[in-house]
Amino acid sequence: MYVCSCFGITEAQVKQHAEDGACTPRQIASACKAGTDCGGCVRRIQALLGRGACPRRELIDRRAPALEALDDAA
Image (cartoon, rainbow, N blue to C red):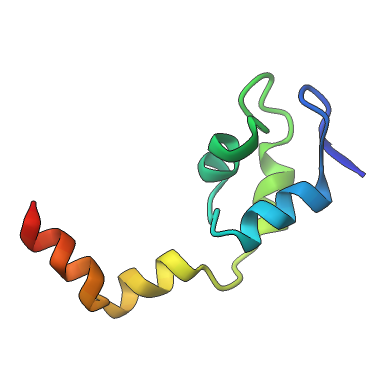
């Protein structure tokens, strides 16, 4: 089923981008442009992303050493 009619993006594509690490509608948009034209699909994208696990968010919450090293370099 299509999520974004403007760019022909399907639910499966959004889910694949989420599995690849996109945790927010903005990150999905960066990956495939969904949500960047009329914006009518943004709520559907949010629903597909839900409140599931997000690898990036989990690293931030844990203050992973790799992220601390990046903070120190800045």
